Image (cartoon, rainbow over all chains, first blue to last red; front, side, top):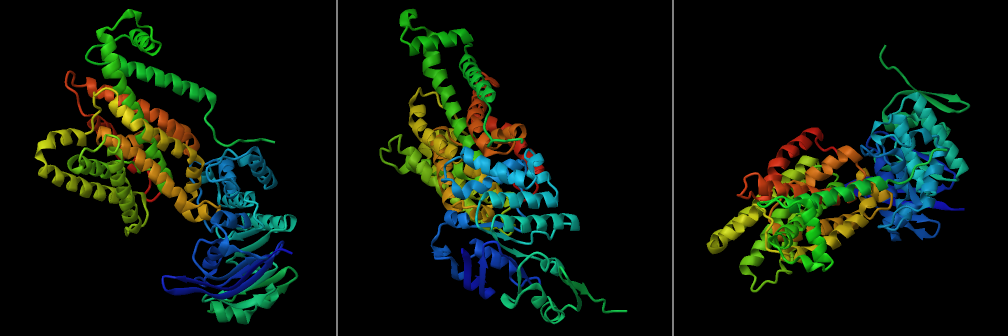
Length: 258
Length: 344
């Protein structure tokens, strides 16, 4: 079974160790979520996997060494959705989604009918058909995120990295986007690695959690293993109460003062 | 299900553009010290082209064939190049204010050409563009690296400020060279202001191969210019070799600019005015903007040249003065409407 294997990953930016000695294994269809306090190195870790910040350590997909691949070949394996994807003013949703085919095109080629077909397929699967002529810069937060995910899926890469896909969204959009990701990774057998801010939500959909603090993995496992009051107190400095629910642990911040 | 296709220019727009080009060329050739009726223009041209010289050579033949037509075509080719170079710089730098003149590319080309004129021994006319190109490429790389490292980050204005600084420096060096070679100063001064010469077909013949190749290369990158719109990081994760693509675009745009500048001198703002007006009409996709910039850049400069020839007739103004008079206020308008650091 195809597997992304990351071992001993280090990221150093301007002399600082941002990510230290991280190892992750993710299989297709699996969703791994990275949580951790601000500045823990979550985004840097995803960017290192996406190849846009320099890193050291092993990055393999089965026997393929990602470090031997060009950006284009790497993009055929790994797609990345930034925390706040750039939505160029004046670009139609369809044109934006079509950008996802870049990795499959020769540098100076233009899209074939098949590329257009793939973009249309993804757009209809994600219920974005009514938006195809809209200017991406005019979309709401939830629409943007769905359009950005559509662009990543058009890239047809088996591994998708999502940096805080729901941070800017209200609870309705948040649910919609997370349900979408969950459905797609199961249907299309995509490995998802995401970062997430909301602890309770991070326990709902992903298969496993990695808790990052100061660039290191300090806890990992299922939501009920990682999301404990002790772990959160220790690494976030927060006083929380955990309620075990059938869908996952619910994290409630405690009011300290009276 | 609704379907959409990738952005292309509709056939009617091509047809409209072709008509606009023909009308522009006709007007350009007709108007001047002696006005020649459009039908006479076309019959003279077809006589020359198809060898039907039974009408004999008239003074009109000489005016059209030796003076007006080469000049109008030169204006068209140079306008096409400057507008498409501006358009390409805007795309790859994600900066609506990018223009060969404002990035210092033209000044760099000017310095290169000046050095070649002064110190080159028996410099061939065909080598002048190469000296100009070296200057142009050096200038754009200097501007880009200064603009990137500016405290303000990579905002639109930082890049243009860097361009202005580089242009000033290079122009100062050029002036210094001029003062040491005062015998050629009148020639150089006319050149700095930008002019379309009346020296028959030679200039056109010199630059057309360079400009054609550069424009064809830029056209091949029109889809890539759209990918640049999402920024370097995301473009890399989509599989675009950002550095290599940007390098190729800069080289092509700078070489073409240098070729144009080496025969016409400094003509500014064409690269901002034309693509920006087109943006307002057809949107921001370079698949459409770039081909249209080539066509309408040419049309624009032919009309600017007609103005330069007629406003103070029988005196002629430098065409660079005309484009600056039109372009500088326009630049302020674009500057005002683009938020600091915004894209496209």
